[in-house]
Length: 93
Image (cartoon, rainbow, N blue to C red; front, top):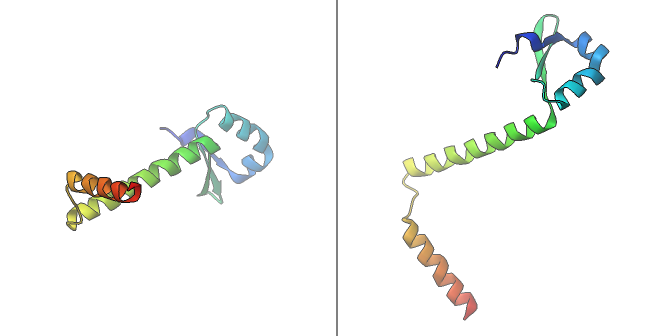
């Protein structure tokens, strides 16, 4: 992704907020806002933000799973399924 054309001062965003939001809603790339020449914020559409958050959540789950594997906190799937079946039989019976 090339964000170089999407870097704008905050004054531009203030003056053109409705247009920027409409562009983002139409699929434009996120916009980096600067203040005194320094990057301060990123503005993006809500769908992209939610997708990013979902991706981060999945990566965190994956990292936690990898941590469990390294720490030896694993069991064979067959064993887990048998335990679930036994609990179901106990609850049904």
